Image (tube, rainbow, N blue to C red):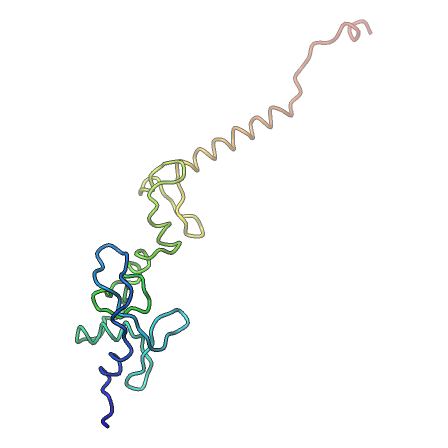
Length: 170
């Protein structure tokens, strides 16, 4: 019996009757990888003496060329085990992160501060930890802090009172 080709070995580990993604614009069911997976849920495939990620191998085989350096493969269907080419798109790491549903993408999608001020170039600065901060809110916070400090200073001053009649008699 002849040894199966790499393409045959790959195809034997793909279940084409996977779930239909609920993401708008992603058509057809996922082709789920039934072979081995890594700790993060991505399919792994042994080819040419090394282990590669199954979704990256699927894109390279479908396109007939290697994935350009610096590009990630975005699972548009949000299924890490999917190897269907129409669900996979080579994009930059930044685009891949911002398309996801993690905390980084959620924060990047926020366009206004909690008080309703726009995060635009004129009203936004970066804190030491890299987060966006609102200049208008910072100004209001500083004004309130200075007003409270003035009130505190005035509260410690005892007002001058007129002498009482008993004191004048003495």
